[in-house]
Image (cartoon, rainbow, N blue to C red):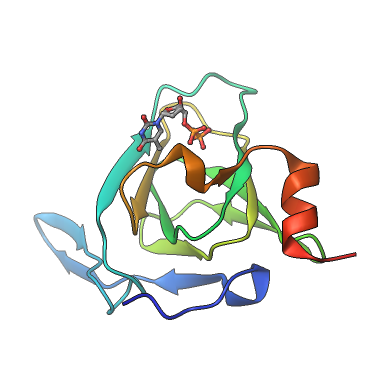
Length: 141
Ligand code: TYD
């Protein structure tokens, strides 16, 4: 069961384990350990053209965990009240994004890959794609 509440106050950077040896580095994340939910879906963004913006929506109940497995990008989070931008540029630093948080992803470096772990299967009905509707639902000023 996923227990965390929504909004920016519940979002956080998570330091993932690093197993380092002469063959290279290994980083992992697993359910209810590094990731505060049960993972049901994985998707990734890649070949993002320079200047392109992704996201631009919020989720009603979906929990997500974002990892910059290659390169770098910015994740701006907004819950209708507070706003914070996270520079994602280390593959061992993930970002937990709680439900009811508007996110915009920008400034993708060339060759970057954004891995997203998600708590539910894809469901378009879980999206707020219109900012006004999100703000109204969030009940923030
Ligand atoms: P969207 O969530 O808007 O992408 P982003 O947040 O990265 O900008 O999804 C873009 C398109 O891909 C949209 O038509 C829905 C589709 N899609 C799926 O079919 N399954 C998925 O798991 C995801 C994340 C998106």
